[in-house]
Length: 340
Image 1 (tube, one colour):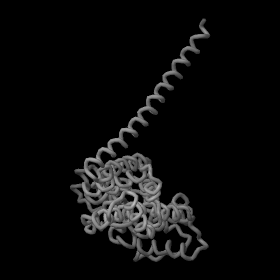
Image 2 (cartoon, helix red, strand yellow):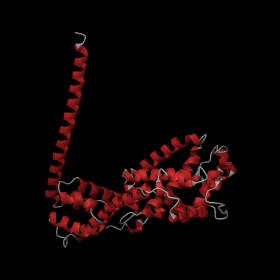
Image 3 (cartoon, one colour):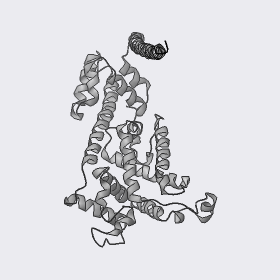
Image 4 (cartoon, one colour):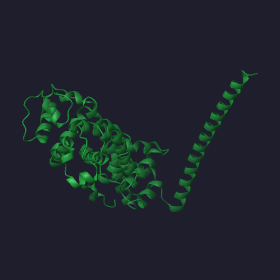
């Protein structure tokens, strides 16, 4: 009799799990059927397909492009499903095919083709950007490659223009935040992507990069006045390793990109396809913001780095949940986001 009790308990658990799964499956099909019915009714009432309704009622940028992307991806039409992954050169022909499939006259609706093209350039461009970034991440640093070595030496020159590097293998590398006398070992996690980003920051935003480096080495003597330090309780501020943190922020930017979180930002700043330069500009912004955030958090020691980084990541993710968000508008080409 006692042995039957566990069997009954297991039976109840399995029955409960089965019921939950059955309810979820029914809800899925019910919602999908209901959504298709709603789309059909809306088309009959407005005389416009879903793509038209989105383009005509939603402003350009992330709001519109993400709705178009969802509509195309969830469509029952194979043509619409695959349109989000076509080659950039095939976008114009793809739009013509979509207009023909939807029985939309391009002469009567010229604005639709322009709007769809802008959206598809962003959608396809984002996918291609992921591929470009992934390729760099997967390429390991090779000290036998002259191009890799040249980039590394340039990084030193940009960050320490008045201090010659005594030799390629040197403890001097620790001065810009590497862990040992040969930086190549620090690039293992992010490959060439980490070096590309660090060099971009040091070259394109030289004054800011040198300031952040200086502050990371001597946080107590940053741009804050003595009064501000006392007010913010920063007299015991902890520094960090500039290059290592740069590689770590590269990892953060990479994960935001591949998860799709950065779509909001890129669809708002790039009127066409987002490029590697857009990604590197975003990295520069994240370095700026993390540096400020680190000082504001005033950690007790470097062992708190992961906690601070995770808190910073959550803040960025929360910001990107706003469909109008552009992380670094001063880099933006948002002026080009005319009402297409």
